[in-house]
Image (cartoon, rainbow, N blue to C red; front, side):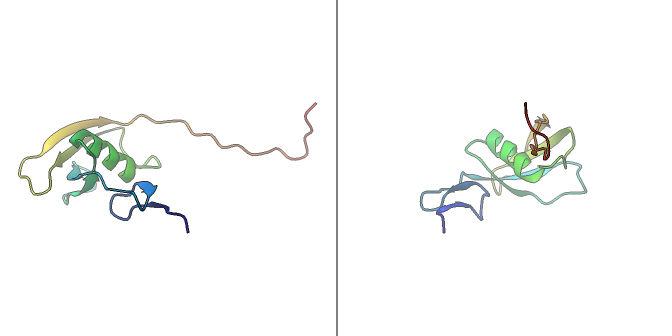
Length: 103
């Protein structure tokens, strides 16, 4: 089995023998499905933790176009508030056309 795996804690793909999770933060998406329980976010800065929180939690177009994320250090009382704008990235699917010969 390959040593390159997804970390069960932070969700990042890395070499298991060398991986160290980024610092842990708490994050919450305000006014989204009555969500009121903070979830783990990982990043070396609070901004990178908010970004990874959004990338992991809202893929496949299951997110609003703009969102307000609150983040804090675990156990802290005060939240820092961030506005996040989602920028869609095009994806491409390639399929061979059978039965047609190129000139």
